[in-house]
Length: 286
Image (cartoon, rainbow, N blue to C red; front, side, top):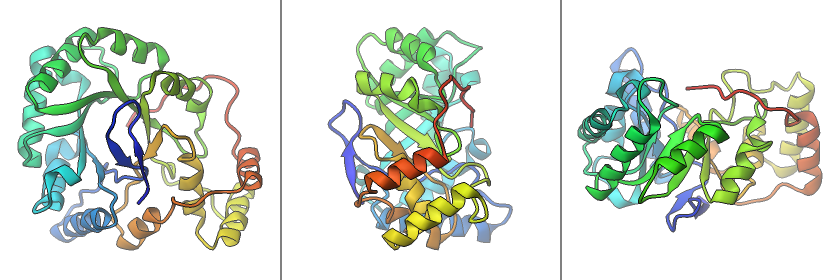
C-alpha cells in the first residue's frame, strides 16, 4: 500500500484506509465478518482505521479493538472522533478516555471533532485537544465536516499545536471541496481525508454515462470502476480516503487502487463526466 506524509506532519499514512461507519451488524456472524475484513485490510497495509464514539454508540470502537488486537500498536494509524454534544473541555477529555478504553489502547494517532458544535465554543474543544496531546493520549488534532471559515476558527483556537486534518465527504458526485477547501488545506499543510468515496449506495452504474466512462477506463487499466474512482480521488498529494466495507473481496479491491497512475486523458474524461461544481456546496455530515 502506497503511503504519503499526512499533511504537514512527518507521519506517513496509507493513502487508502478503512472506514467503520455502520460496519456493526445485528448478529455475531455479521460482526465477525466485519472484524475479519478489518484484519485483512491491515494485512494489506491499510493501517489507517477511522472510527467514532457515535458509531453504534461506541460499539464500533469495540469491534475495531478486536481487529487490531495482537498487532503492534505503532503499525496502526488509529483515529476516533468526539461528538459535538460532548465537546466541552471536560467532556472532550472524558470522551477521549472512554474511546481509549473501548479501543483498548493508550493513545490515538488522531482525534477529531466530528462536526462543528453548536453546544460549546471551539476554543473550549481545542483547549481540551491540546491537553490530550500534552498528556500523551493523542498525537494529532483534527476536525471533520468543517468548511473554511469553521476550520480557520478552529486553527486560531489552537495555542501550542497545529491542525492536522479535516475529514469531509468526497466522492465523484460530490467534488465541492476541490473549489476552495482543498486548496486552502493544501496551503496550510492540512491533510484532507475523504469519506464515503463511493457515495451512499449511488455509485455510478455501467448503465449511466458516467459509469460507462469509468468502465471504459477500467478496462484499459485492467482494473475495476471503483479502483478508478479511488485512484482519481486520491491523485492530490494531500488527500487520503477511508472506504468502508465488510466484504473481504472488496477490501482487497480497494487496496489495489493506488500505486499506479491514470493518464491525462483518463483524468480529463472523468472530469468531464463528473464535473466539480463552480459554486460552494454545503458539507454533508456523517
